[in-house]
Length: 88
Figure: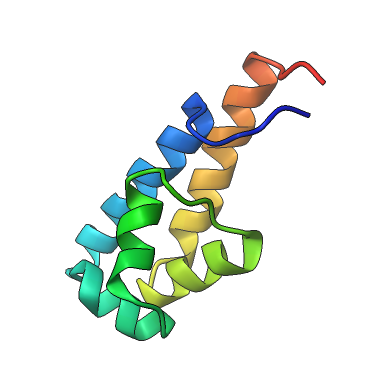
């Protein structure tokens, strides 16, 4: 499997993470505090410099109060991958 950093799926994920945060009315600093992380952590994720693992992804969505967005995001990524399978 190839690396996923800055792939179209990763770019989409980072855009969704940012939008979920903004929709929750949170600044990067607000979200970072809820996650017990530095503000730079949120900034690096949103600017595609850092990936999230699954647990961090769920914690992000919970901290934004929008677990439903997690389902929508994963479904959209999965639909895109099934339309354009990634080569092994």
